[in-house]
Length: 499
Image (cartoon, rainbow, N blue to C red; front, side, top):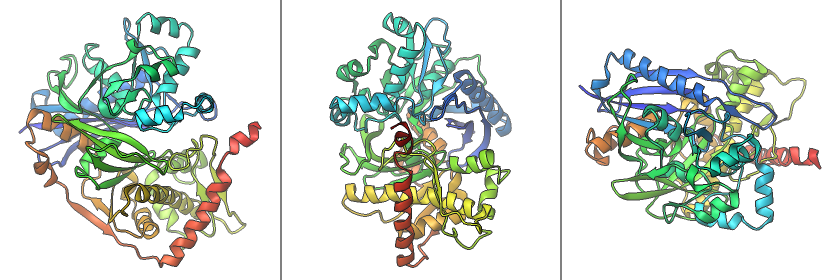
């Protein structure tokens, strides 16, 4: 027997999952790592801690599966996207902490570029909204704020990478400086139509070309993993950003199919085939993946704080001890009691794109309990996804017939039922929720012939449960109207304070 290993490097934890030929999970190892908040709106990770946890869980997953490196047919990487690492080429050491995708410190830089009339240039070439979410302005910030960084970068001594590049660098003992098209398309520096780094965008952000990784397809053999590691000698054969990986894991391989992942954030992607379809409703046009010589595109809506609001209930408010307890607490009340929680802890993503919005809790009375707050938090996740679906329906021209769901919070039956009620379409949950890791495994396995075709992997996808809308439509509309009011109250909060 041989297996495929997915290294799933997420925003709050590193995981390694061993999959068999049926796409079933053989073993899982996971370790959380520190979230660093130097200032309000700033979020950082320690790149060395990312690597240490990822290498550690790889060893653990192989041990749990009782297999060795020689039993591994291929290794795939999937990763938190946009998070920015800059390291010294000679020493291999990061020049500072990684700046996380949620980080808002470059919002003012984006405002200046927008005021200079540059937003359309970025949108037309990259498919992205000019926002602090993406990597390009984060690189510029590092070069301008870390002592000596710009001089070193201009001398060719520094390397930039999203987390996939950092892991490939470490897995190959420094031999590989690569990324794939899906991750490159999230940087504000990559022309998704020409499939190339763009000199005009590099100049606008002041990023030297010498820092950039080589862009490869999402499914090919990049090289062997260093023999000093537990999976040494196995081919590294797949790299794909986490949300694109989940789209593959959900087998949304044909134009028109869509999935939503409920992770730290929420991410709705619709495969648009080989067409880069422009959004007119504040969604992103992005590369889904490149495989077997064909480039696939997607429309994407991004929510910055999805499941992370449950972590906040646990770590910030301390009204639950474990994330899994939130459903029972939310069920302790019949409804939200008029309480609405807008989870804009890191601003609002699509379709609002307001980096100055902040988390807002409305409708509190003397009768409000922790159960109402828990329920409002879960409902806030669902409302945000509903806003994405509404925008996606307008862009696609035809409404979604169903929504495929995955990610940790998709296991929450209360949330999934409420999602179906608010969307007015079925929500379909597969038996394997680890679709992000599974997508990376598929990319790696297809590259080495472990799986022969997409048709073969499509047979692995099975439904666990369909959630059909049950709430009367008038009630659902009333709740969404009230949600829209709550979102309006959260917008421009920090900007108003600065003014």
